[in-house]
Image (cartoon, rainbow, N blue to C red; front, side):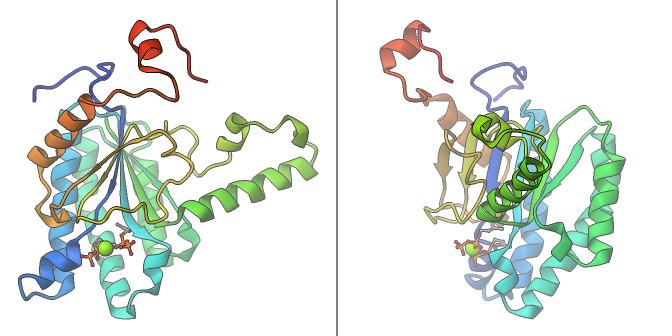
Length: 252
Ligand code: IPE
Ligand code: IPE
Ligand code: MG
């Protein structure tokens, strides 16, 4: 697939990925789960590069869910240290490639060191104009909605807006990063057919692509295959096919 312009509707502007299957990838090879997570980091690096080359605007990577905090302590510790290493090693390369790093999630649960590393990566890349890479870290979709509601209630109490006037646009402005457009394409690797508390608000109209490929094996060709699948979809947003094809409908 050749590079297409950011405005080509066949290329999703925002791709969100549930990077699943690290543990099974390792276990099927008789290796410790950690080895799968390490290879998973390599896959994240590969896919980030490919996404930039394909003209994708935003790439959200589900790196660690709120539920993942309940995994065995040793695995959580390994994952945190891998994330820390990844950010330390990758940040110069991301700067060179004009990548802007963003993060969504309950960062207050991270260690001070990791939180500082994440925040400094976000700050250093803030002015970059290329691909936006969003790490969903200590992230839960329901928690994000609850956190947004908390902010809204606070502002309503302060009289900043009238609750009667609340609409979807106002609500969405209270989500973790309201500058990020909704995902057009949601990819889940590792065979499972579920959403696992990822971007619950934002995926309302995302196209979904699942694959049996385990995340450590996922590469540029797999991403391109997902984009080909996406390009074959007709996004109707509740309209009829006729309305979509004649361009007469307007979704709100
Ligand atoms: C995804 O791989 C990485 C994280 C959830 C952190 P898993 O660790 O969930 O791998 P499986 O699903 O057990 O194979
Ligand atoms: C989803 O994978 C979370 C991440 C990829 C970070 P999980 O492996 O945690 O999801 P479940 O438990 O299979 O639903
Ligand atoms: Mg899993």
